[in-house]
Length: 141
Image 1: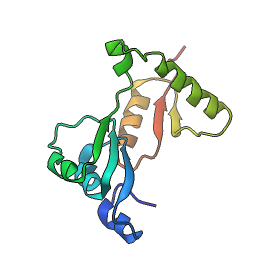
Image 2: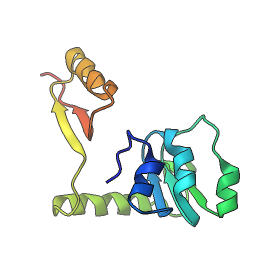
Image 3: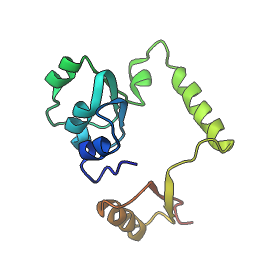
């Protein structure tokens, strides 16, 4: 297992791997340089996080590796021909969760929605040690 809080390249190399075929960056593009170093030639990286930091595109080109951005709302924002695919994907995931084949990343639910619970949710996220999603739910009656 690789811990995203520790140097990634060293951990992957310790597993006996020089490169990996695919990399998914679901949060925090601070790992972009490590991802480019670890991706195999002609491999692929997908990212959903915004970046305002320079990407080492020259190294990606040298490896002929691809970088794919994903944004959940692209289809609806641009009315793409495959717009209904988002519905199909979300329905598929919902069915898989209901069947127990996919687990959510829900870690904690704070209720009700109020200032104290919002502060607590922020505190938990700001520790940098939170694992999974923290949800603040249910407006007070």
